[in-house]
Image 1: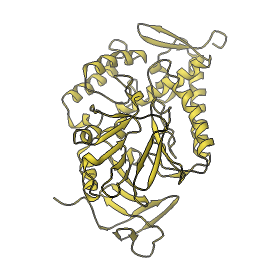
Image 2: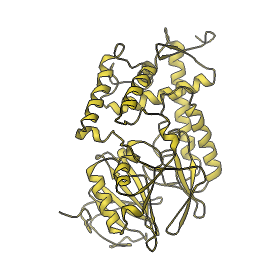
Image 3: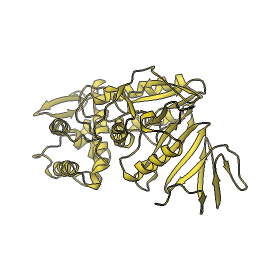
Length: 398
């Protein structure tokens, strides 16, 4: 079998290190050096098809994994091999695909890391971060995760293939206005995905998260590997129980999906009274105060220096969307479901939402978080009928 590692890269490659980007044509990639005219960095770069591995700091690696060719669907996995037969640390696992499993297997072999000597810190329970967790756990790896990520059997952004999750799904979909009677086409799309997951079709593997055993993470928990001392930090917002890691000594933060340069992270829930967007806003403000000047290594896109630009951009984007949603509810001639508001606020492709069901789910759940925020602030009203939540403006504003 041909190795996934390629020592020679032909054609144009883009190399990213800290804040510097340059392009180079033909290059021979060797450990800890870049041959040719440019050699400004001391790190390893490997090309694994569409996958890049870099030694971003001595003994601290970043691996870029993908589920397709879209850059927005790539995720950064981090790996610290242990010293002298000590345990190693991986931050997240990537998508559940055979390609990603094979790539990571070869990397672990390359660094002489056994499954039973591997610890995996899961930042949160989304399929791009935990897709391969069950595979590693079944082979002896030790998994760490915040149990708040398991507070519900069903989540709007991932699937558990069990009766409890499927039963809870019906209630969650009803909450946002998706039912068999009200929205039969959209309902049938959810049911078809359920069927594919039960049959474990190739298309459905990407969406399902299989169960795994894990050790609970708490805020402030220490993780020491190689020459690095990391501390767990609670980053509620993107999800209810998302955790990150901070290296205080070297002033580096690994915030998962909480702050991403070039992306407005989704704040996703479909459960009432979780106040998730309010938590997110407070988290962004606290993050900027606490980690100003730190180097930020998100789970998607490139690293950046924390100077307030990224949090400010995200806050501005959410404030604008809140204004849009507030106005939609204000001028509506009837109480609206979350689905109805979402389709108007984000411009649905048709009456059934978006061709990509995952996109439809993300937008509906993001809209729900915004509606909950406006309701918490007393700017809109909420009523419930047959499990469906309806939103309308206060009488004084309508």
